[in-house]
Image (spheres, rainbow, N blue to C red):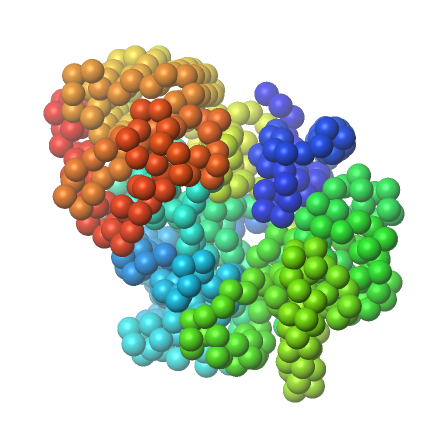
Length: 600
């Protein structure tokens, strides 16, 4: 097995979102990248893979894992807000999280918390609100739901620092993960992983990506009373920098800061680390800890743009996740009241909030021109944000405006937002090494075979099998299975099978089978590298949707792939406003009917 990727792993994985490269935690996948860049990053990863984390990092990581795996008393935000695509998804997650991950403990004396509020982004434009306006709009909708459903004034509770709140962005088509979101009827955060958790009923079911993210991010809750934290719904990380801290800024953004002490990278180090490829957070030297953000610039340009910080200390790539004080949240909602009321416009946090708030006007205009934004438009927006900033800081000087929260350059990171990464990080369950050990521990895996009846099946010692039943067959090396029932299974190496029931299941090497229920005698047959999912409607009727593990769903979105009669885009349109709660129940009924017929 490959050595555990530790130092700087997070640096490269974040390029999934901020650059032109796509990486998993254990190996890199090049997409449209010059050879020289690939050679540099691969060499740097190999060099740093063998570095041991600082002893303090190991202690923090152990503390984080202990908190994340305390299933009896999980660390949770008082209020969990889910921003979804439609109202059916909102209802689904309100119920699932309230009765599951975020369920009130029997010993809880608080009638209101933990509270789950799920809302849909019913924006006027089909292109959406952007994660900036989208955050503000989702928070305002959640406040209305809290008042109507629980009689709680969430905004006031947050302003008085009585509660902590977290918002998870999950809306979107999930093109890069296709066809898996299609099988969940566009419920992208509901994509299942090949590992199970225990429901309140005692049943074992595959955990969803969002449930894993909610459980992981809860470790920041105790440090963020009176703040709204914002996370993305498909990324799990284990920090090696302190996760319990006292906020010093009204806005703080998560990043992985490189180096020790207050020494910024040289021009050579900036290039070697690939810092010119994505969004970077720079922190000033000294006690203030003030920070600023730049995006995809070389070292001389970054130094010029960040001159208002003074001497630069540490820098590192942004994760995008952030938290805001109740006061600056209110100020932003007031500033963009017109857009929020009209449900009009599209603004993202990085280019439209954080950069104009932290960069000089001319540097901001220069940076935005690289994105094709007209100078007059950028100047007008910068003036607007500067006016808001000056007024806000004059009234609220107790904290700085913009700071950083370091997650540690040794942090472990697992991303499930692309099909290739979904496969790579799920197969990590069957690997050896420190990173794989942590992943298994996070999911409560104490044995490679758990809660299964597979006595007649030959299973490679490297593979993981959870909550499965089968009479005969074999499972090849480095495969992962969960909630699978069949009379016979023949699973090849590096295969992933999730929530499938059939008399016979044959999966070739590297195949991915998902949500399949087949009652025919021949069962399920997948060739090497096949991806086969089932799409069920409210009437319980199902269709198969096929792809290959090397097909990018985003690039193939409008194409009709071999074996299909419709494109991924067509299925997405058909799934719009699907009642996923009803469909989930139908799917479970079909699964039970099929599995009961196997006499297992």
